[in-house]
Image (cartoon, rainbow over all chains, first blue to last red; front, top):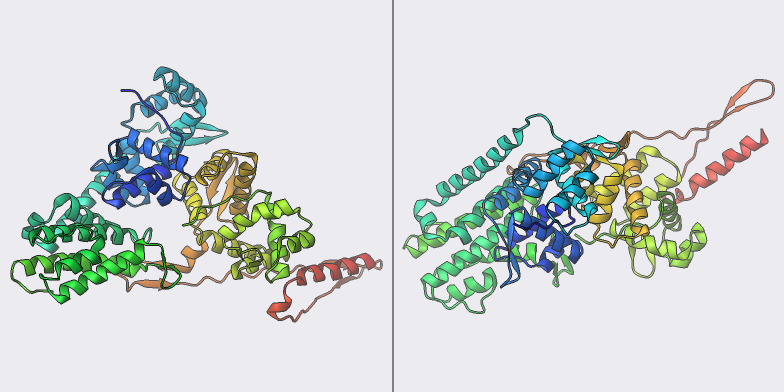
Length: 320
Length: 234
């Protein structure tokens, strides 16, 4: 398999993966650049490198990147230290990096190691780009240590503690899934779409537990889940949702003949908070809304309540 | 988060521009800053984007110092170490780009200075150039002068908690656990020189200055002038 190395940093690879997961439907390079607040070439490099190491994939037909499960989700939902461990787990499986590490051990020079990897794998990237990317990834993930005076070495000890961290990330995902299953009940979990509703709401729940790092992320993921859920509800009632973009438009269309005003207003809360979180400058106030940590947490719970209550209503039960 | 534009001058020159904005204290054009600072017009202009992106200055054609910029300018002018560090820390903590750069060092348990400068330049998304490299160096100097990062040999390491983290610690998801601690930085002392007279008697002159906040700007210069004059007389 031919390899291509792109000049980027560990942080931008994580950011590109995060952007792809958050959109729900895939992200193009412009969106990733906007998300990372970086230049388009930087975003392109980050996306392509994330694809190289198997976190996301590119669909040439749609020009969109989509996530590769499960590691993309593990990476995005993990806390900062866990991110390093998950990224290391993925990185250590990437052939050019494995070769770089082994050459680095022999030569003790990252420049020489990069040069040798370039030659052995016939890479087109400049030696300095290979060096920059692998040093950034290696030091971020604690796979390489900085010895000073421009010298880096692979971590020598059999330090596999990062695998334990990855295990805890996997465990934490499973715990979150169990909690959501418990909260919604198995009937609802079976009814809702796994990829478009269940997975994003689990991700939202996990991001709410790490709210201090990003108060918008739970809203983005839960909002995606609710919009997909309303699409399902629309299909159930055979409501035409064409041109009904967003949560507010969808619930307006559905509640013309179905559900109740209360369901409509719960969804309006969800829709309006999502818009405040997602839409940048609000013309009504001339600035973007700040999102409080409390709202980030509450939003996920209210979204779960909305899913449950609408499902109940569909089945003849009125519970809020 | 807005895209960052790195500074284009050394830390000293950037500091001079900041103190000039602070001394003028009202909306002013490029020429006012050029005249008051002695820094070339193109240099001031090239650094304004950075100063605006980290919210030290604000405004359109006529720019003025922000309140946190004014605190920093005052601390720089009076060479008040701890106030300067607090002011820089506040600016760093409130800027996503600068915070991410600190995190990059923290997670890697230190970075080589060259590697860190490259990381800053690359992450800014700006096209590689001498100006961008100078800017990356200046950002490193800002981190060092703020005390957020420090030097250990040829490595840059994380020094400790930033001011925002010291001020408020929010534990979630239980939103009732809001534990707010305010840390008041230790005040720096204005050192007054000791005058040794010919007869061997030591005179300690203590200056007591009463000034309202709006008289603080430029006060450092005046005090320095008085002290220099007293020292010369000796």
